[in-house]
Image (cartoon, rainbow, N blue to C red; front, side):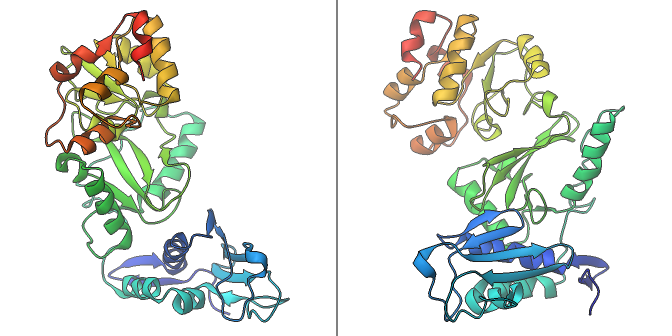
Length: 357
């Protein structure tokens, strides 16, 4: 029996071989329409030679057994499938090599390469995540967990890494400005695996918070860092507080409007709302049911909200245009929206609620 934790040593960096294997297995499975990813388990229609794929049900299972540090494929169909029956299973590496050779070759290339895996202090350009001076017991636990997450954040510099390629495709597709995209990371393992990491910077170019956006078809689409979540406000320290501030839900939307912030959804935390109440805020929420309901609530408080109906009509946009990023893409814009351009679409008149969407 070999050691329970298999590692490879390269340039004084230790790479968890099984974690890397699982990452490529997940990427391969995500290309299969039948696959359902559930953490350390993947359920799919069996694609092993000799399997009759009984009734087209998902009876194939890939499981990462952490106690053994091994990945196995097991089929629960009937027939001649070699992965079916008592005591029969296929190793994860063999499954990947046999049925997804392209991903297997990428896996082998990575573990044999001398490229660093993870984010070093230099990779982060000596930028540190801000933490409170005094941490509660719960926050100490979260901080300990976070140290394990952050080591898997990679800058978008390795042009051959499949996840980096996916991240760059996402950036291009969403037309994200280079001044933001250059600071993005991608997570290669752990809780945020397969997600693009969007950092929230402060005035001192320090990372105060981050949000993780899915790239490989996982739910939920967004994961928010737990530590300091109640006070996180994208670009909150970077705006000109003497000018009108446009409040959006998502950080990506805020990248397309000058002097804007993002609250990470319609559930605005008390500490964040206190910050916003000190500013001349105009609320441009998503053009969906949740955004509509919050807009009505804000309107009843006489806070300026955005009239999507009039905006979509004037700009000749599709009715299902759901946010500013969608708008930017449809219009093929090259510059950020300015408040002066959008100001006529904000209202505090409760009678205007019929034009909200």
